[in-house]
Amino acid sequence: MFDKATLTLQVDPLIRMALAEDITSEDVSTNSVMPKETMGEVDLICKEDGVLCGAQVFERVFTLIDPATKVEFYAADGDDIKKGQLIAKIRGDIRVLLSGERTALNYMQRMSGIATYTRNVASLLKGTKTTLLDTRKTTPNNRIFEKYSVRVGGGCNHRYNLSDGVLLKDNHIGAAGSVKKAVEMAKAYAPFVRKIEVEVENFDMVKEAVEAGADIIMLDNMTHDQLKEAIEFINGRAEVEVSGNVTRENISRLTDLGVDYISSGALTHSSPILDLSLKNLHAI
Image 1 (spheres, rainbow, N blue to C red):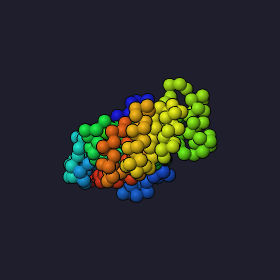
Image 2 (cartoon, rainbow, N blue to C red):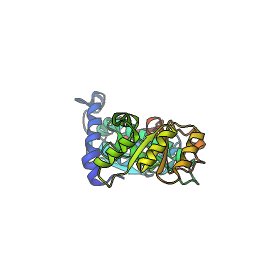
Image 3 (cartoon, helix red, strand yellow):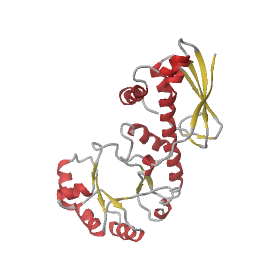
Image 4 (tube, helix red, strand yellow):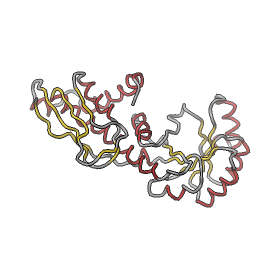
């Protein structure tokens, strides 16, 4: 759940922008059939099995339009939900329920989809010491929702943004001239409390990163044999992250490596939505 400061300062402005995108002047459809305030109720129904996520955001969409709207949930973020299950009842001005419906569902379907996919992937790492991480491959202006959803699904967050940590990728190394030089420059510039991670693509880069004193070495797009050789050489002198097109379908090939982290952009950029719907709207 988002704390009050995060909700007010970071989440609310994004929801307001999403609502403003959907309602530029008025909701013509709703105002056509509902010219005056009428109290009503509608059900939030799950249409497929998955993991619920985004309850707070879903509710906030309606209460930002009208604080008098009430949402009663029968499941919480992180709960397994089943097809046909009643998730919540929403009560308020029918005009508010109609106008906020799509934005609220868009958030919850996307967040629940990420949480569901993440839980499926994380389950494949059970019994290992490896932590599942997300990436910065998120939808613009939706990172706060998508990374939260990864946590709800049982994954962990990599750095939140470019201000959050040092990760020297191929183009940073190219700009600096070498792995050694890039690490030296990062150590001279970044605060000492920040770990320095280096992305490497071959064994020579692995050796250079170890010798330069990198804290974390990301082994990117390597074969299984290359990964084993690199991990054996690193031998605990740095934490090890494996990355590169990791999905639910292929992560099992990495579980025997014993690495510290596996990162997967698919958690946020390729998760399908979880199908949810608002049904049975009626006046009360």
